[in-house]
Structure formats: structure tokens, C-alpha cells
Image (tube, rainbow, N blue to C red; front, side):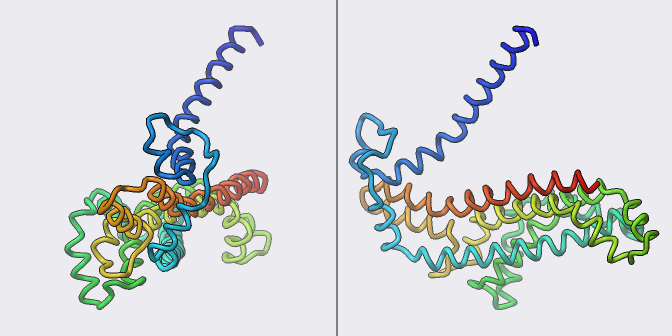
Length: 279
């Protein structure tokens, strides 16, 4: 390898590292600030390392708000959304990729058209529908809207994965004696696992971080974590804002997402490798 190519690769690696540091610095600053008292955060010179920090901000945050109830609400809503989104979207993706039926093109166009509708324009209709079903301030009311919002794009994601797996693999397995269902679950489904994981991550992030729909449908003490964080910040703003507690609250909300993504990312990579070997 010539020295010019090595120099180019070194420059590209340095640029990629610089971009990665710029991207991760706000996350690091949030976590670092969550361990520091407000006096250090409001000082003229920034503190880049949490030396002398403590867990006091986290203890104060957990003692002031209904964090446990909001966490439980977000977890239940998110898990329901992910499960039913994958169930409905996977069935729809299989149908439009593997079968030719009347109205197939209209269905695909309808899914695309739904993605063009602004979410804010649907709030009044969604609120009226959920209220008529007596599902305001409930897990199921919020979950229904989340599922309806996430399914269309997930169908498009999974459609690409399903279309990428040749139907001839199932036909060959059926020739070898497997039933259609057996060929699908033993041959095709393992190859689609990475797509299901990627779609599940998308649905998880959308449901976990959603704020506006929850603000419309949830009132009173029933809150998801984004609503709880908003209420906590508003409560802090009535006095002098304690940025250490605000950063601690933000870290508590973001931590489950980061942990989930790190765990699933490894499984997604192994699934892609396994699918390549099986194919």
C-alpha cells in the first residue's frame, strides 16, 4: 500500500473519530452534569470530569416525582406497541411481497399516503375516537394510536427484508418434504430475524420517545416518561433551575433506550451474519 493511500485512510479515520466525538459529546455532557452540584454547573469554568460528584441529583429526582409509575407506564405502552406493530407489519409485508391479490397496489399506495399525513392534523380525530371508546388516560388508548402511527413505516421496512429473501428457498424446502409453514419457519424466518430486530428497534424508539400524542391523550397523574420529564422541568423552573437534577432526570429517561439499543445491536449483527451463512 502506497504512503498516499495510507495517509488518506489515516485522514479518513481521524475525521470519522472527530465526528463520533462531536456526536457523543452531548450525551457525555448530560451524564457528566447529572453527577455534579448546581454550583459547579453554573460556574464560569466548565467541569469536564465528574470528580467530586455524587448520586445526590438522582436521589432528589427519584424522591420528588412519580418516576416509577411513569417508567412502568412507558415500558408497558412500548412493549405493547412493539409486539403488535411487528405482528401486523410482518403479516402485511409478507402479503404484499409474496402474494398477488386484488387491491394489492391500492393497499401499498394507501400505506404510502398515510405516511404523508401530518401527525398534528390527526390529533383532534384521535382524541375524539379514544374518548368515545372511554380509553383516555389508559395504556390501551395510547398504545392504539402508537401502533397505528408506527405500523405503516414498519410495513415498508419489513417489505424490503421479505422481498430480499428469494421465494425459491421455500419452494426447495417444500420439494425436500417440508410443509409450507415448516419451510417458512425453518428457512425463511431465520433470515428475516435481522429485519424484525431493526423494525423492533424503530418501533421501540418511536413509542418510548413520543410526546405529543401522550400529551393529548394522557391527563392528570397518568404520564409516560417524556411527560414526567416535562412536568419535572416545569416544577424546577418555578424556582432557580437545578441543572444537575434536570440532567439526572434526562439521564434516567435516556438510559433504558441506550441499554436496549446496545443489547439489540449485538444481536442484530449476529443475526445478519447467521442469515448470510444460512443463505
